[in-house]
Image (cartoon, rainbow, N blue to C red; front, side, top):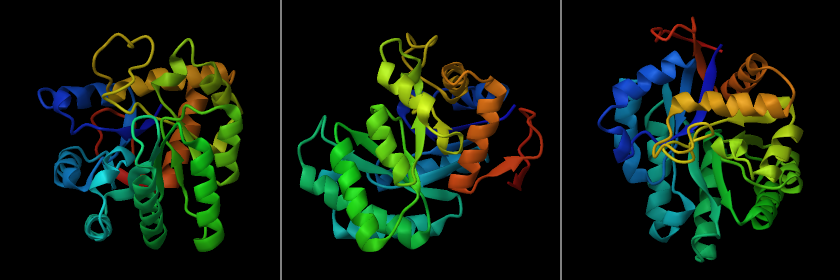
Length: 274
């Protein structure tokens, strides 16, 4: 069985002491590929170094909406150049809108729309962060689609309602579920996980955040725990873990144009094109 964790932050300080051991655990859990997200462009070199150390990692470059106060036109050029500089860059992001923790809405919109345009220019998917901004996000994307054309991508760490989920499915997006889907009170997220079509479903940890049940009490989430997300999604959809693993792995390969190892052995680092 092969799993893909489509959203990690392994460059965070909490992983520095034991990243090799963390990698061994994700390999033992069947995680064969990972997509490392980027919060701001100055992370790029550190993320790139991690990807060079662990060949199963691909990564993104972009600016998080909570850092939108840093946005400049020069940063747009930097993101474009960095995305073109390494073939392991498979996405732009994470970017998007977060109206829960910040009120600089116009700055966020400006940074997000420009990153959408970069993703479109490079034919890369966009990793979208959306918190307390689903209606605004859907309207912005519809306007972008109408004026500039479609962009493919994923609503990451999705926590929206089934109605909101449908908005983004209609726009062609994948929906990625994190450890939130395992939380007892996450009823709307669980219902969303039931209705997403199989060919649009992804899973992630968003580590080191949001450790899933039964690891929720741990201070640090890690890629090996994406298996618990997959198990919960399988329960919600009345199917097997193997079926969810197969479908979400295929979907991640399609969206991010990832390769897969020739064998699911934890020791295997030989990759072929999917």
